[in-house]
Length: 174
Image (cartoon, rainbow, N blue to C red; front, top):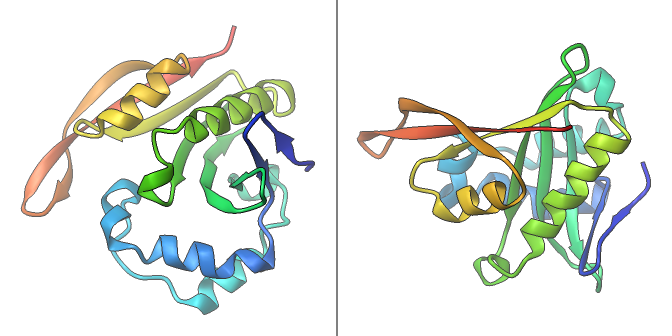
């Protein structure tokens, strides 16, 4: 896969040097609610994951790309998951690691690059995402890229002693 370039950021494949960055993200308890993570990941497991990151999306049913700025600093991750070639769809998730880099347009540009890649290279018909009802910034990001709320999953996730609703959003390509 070649690098996907935008005006301010680019998306690239995972590299062995991404071990520390991914380890920090996967073990950051403040974002576990977003990723539905409940246990820490060891560097050993992440290293194994990186060693297999070269495998084709058609084989492993997922694709993780690094979001980098023009100075080559890694800012976050964008993922395709549950890749379903038969039905031409995949789930998408995105994370900009540092709060100071959020709401600066980087996530918007990364999502647009990924959407274009899914249409032109993967021949997908649709993308979907799941966003907590209280995650207003992510809801705005995805809606602004054409995703539509198609349902509300009541009491979907149990967090900090109470249930939280989650929206299902979908983008169907013409």
